[in-house]
Image (cartoon, rainbow, N blue to C red):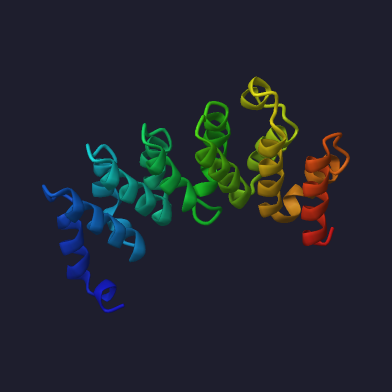
Length: 202
């Protein structure tokens, strides 16, 4: 809109990122993400350590939307934040556009120890959207119930099905993995894989 076309607006918004009031910082961070203000990344990166969870959540979302190389390190921080909503917000806006792809290995490693079911589901989905070979491999392992996390919980069928559904998001890159899972001994996993293959038309 008009706001984003004014270079001084960008300066004003960035200036608000250092405001002492938490909700001013949160609103400024939201605007940075919505208006694609990539020049705000250095200041947003500093705010990823803000004491208020609500601010960190907005900052995490903004950085993931901006997704440039400079945003990767602070996004990695956000993915390990102590607050689940902060981790979730970063994950929900991560995809294969721009440079989110470089986070596949980090996500795969974090998935092993993530205890929060919603965050774990969103991690799987983010890997699916990223869709690189590394991401597909991590999802295939999770879908097979081979990851440490899943073994520890006796590979709950639900979690494996979530990994299969996430694989479907990766498109043609996941076809081989899905075909193997369509032969799985767990019925729920088999049918999720067949469903995904049918949807992809392969």
